[in-house]
Length: 288
Ligand code: 3HC
Image 1: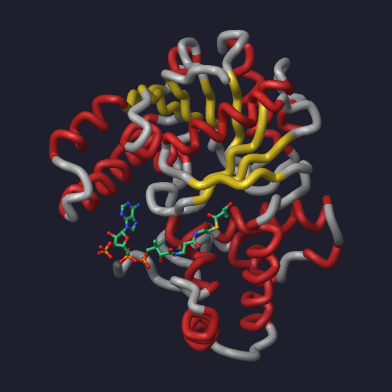
Image 2: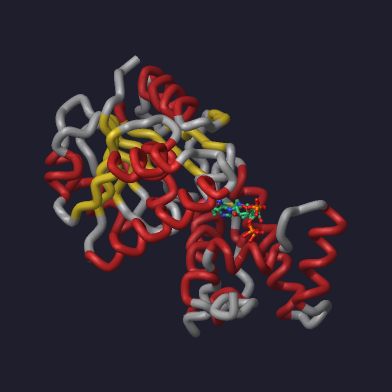
C-alpha cells in the first residue's frame, strides 16, 4: 500500500472544502486546496472555519485542534503548487465531464509519477475520467456524501484499469478520515447510493410537477414516513438542483431512458433556483 502524507483537493466548493477539512482535521494530512478564483477559495475557507467552530462549540475539538487543522490546509490558485508534492489528488470540481477531464489532465501532467488520483464524481464514468490521465491504474472513484464533515460513507469505485493496490490505499485513507467504505466493483453510473437516491428525488419533483401534493406535505411524508433526516425537496436544495440534474442525465444516458429528469428540475435549474448555493430553490435559504 502506498504511504500518503500530502493530499491535494481540487475544488473548494460544497464537497471540496468538506473533503479538505476532514483530511486535515481527522486524518491530519497536509492538504492543499486548489480553486480557480480567490473568491471560491475564500468561501471554501469560510465554510471550513464555520464548520470547525461548530465542532469546537460542542467540544468535539479543542481551539488548538481547530487552529492546527486550519494551519494544515493550504489554499492556492496554483495547480502546480497544489499537486507537485501530493501523494494523492482528490478531484472535486463541478459535475461536468469536460471540466473534470481538463482539470484531471492538467493535474496528471504536473503530479509525481506515483501519485494516486481519485475523483469525487457523483455519477460520471470512472473509466472515462481515468482516460484523461496517463495513470488509469492509479485512478479510482472516491465518492463522499454531503456534508462530508458529518456523513460517514465513502463509496470507492473501481475503473476498468484500477489496480487492487489503488483501491486498498484509498480504503486506508478513507478509514484514516474516519469513514466507512463500500466497494463498487463495476464502474456503473450513479454507483450505489445515487442509483437509488436520484430516482427517489426525481419522483418527489414529479409529485410537485403533477400537482399531487405540496412541498411541505411531500417533505413531511418522507421525514415521518421513512425517517429521512430531511425531506426530498429540502435535500434537493441541499445538494443543488443543477448537480442533481447532471446526475439524472448521466443515469438516463448511461443506464436507461427511464431515469429521464422531471421537467421541473430542468426548469428550476435554468431559472437559477439551485437551492442553498443560490439562496433559493424549493425553500428560501437567505432567511436562514
Ligand atoms: N460541519 C459541522 N457541523 C455541522 C455541519 C457542518 N458542515 N452541518 C451541520 N452540522 C451540525 C449542526 O451544527 C447541528 O448540530 P447540533 O444538532 O448539535 O446543533 C447538526 O449538524 C444539525 O444541523 P442543522 O441543525 O443545521 O440541521 P440540518 O437538518 O440543516 O442539517 C444534516 C443536518 C446532517 C445535513 C442532516 O439534515 C442530514 O443528515 N441530512 C441528509 C443529508 C444527506 O442525505 N446527505 C447525502 C446526500 S447524497 C450525496 O451527498 C451524494 C451526492 O453525490 C449527490
